[in-house]
Length: 157
Image 1 (cartoon, rainbow, N blue to C red):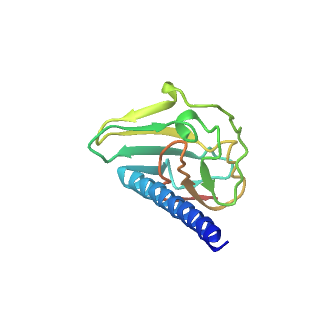
Image 2: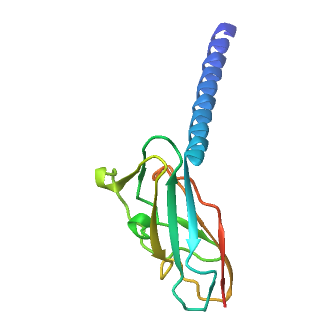
Image 3: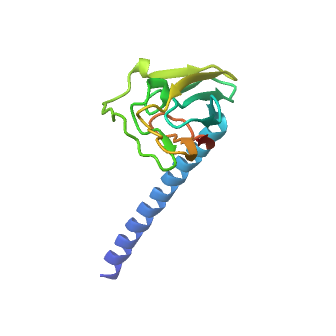
């Protein structure tokens, strides 16, 4: 009985140990991505009138010495087809595209030291209908292999 309990304990211990190592490896990989690639949101301007089209630019820069490939899904590079931004006090109202596996044309490759950018509008997807200050941030994900951006603030009057 004691031998059987010890074997069970060892199996559980080894399972937990391997799980911990796997989680640590994923976290390390994610942190490395954050240093390899940067994502920046840039507002067209910082103050808007209520009802005015709020335009932003997203810049992705490869800071490595080798090409970096990311998936355009869940980014403004595919248009706003997912809740890829965090906008304080505003819920995402756009479509939620359901897909299978990304194909070659769903990826974009950045050469070493290069950047790419896309301009987009919050429009009806993130409707800002009241005056106030709004904090906006890109939410990176495992799907697109991009880190989140630093937040920016815009004012609506």
